[in-house]
Image 1 (cartoon, rainbow, N blue to C red):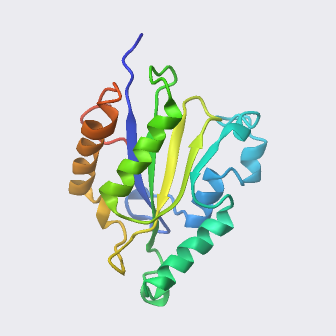
Image 2: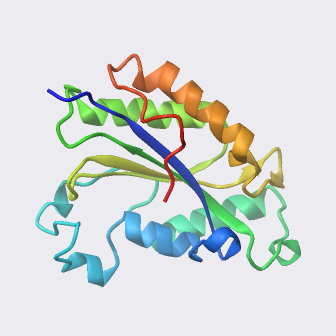
Length: 191
């Protein structure tokens, strides 16, 4: 069997167009992850709607509007003034953990639970939502985190270039490596 390679990618969710980014809101990301977008429900592309019922919400609300409300409540609770943030501020940080189609991992769901536990400890940001997708060619976990730490909005600083390299190394030494997976390569996978 071919080597099982784990993938770990991180991006910020916001309206910024810097570096050719596609603008996205937290609500849109949550709608995608929770499969609320009508186009995905009947999609004939990479998402198989007949398998969507097998997706698993590991953490957070079952609807995108509730995910957005949770974020708003947490921001209010720590005293973040939304009027003082830039219009294209980072609304969330999304991490995606992917397994290869033909994985040797005996219990992929337990692996994703470990990924989420590691992510909580590594970034120390509130987790808004975590969903395992079973309706695409390879199982993967999407986790949305609120970029708030110590009562302040920290934007995308937890995933700057230096932090990403450190996070990736920690992830592979702590979770993916012990699970028997191989490193995806020297470069961070993004999308």
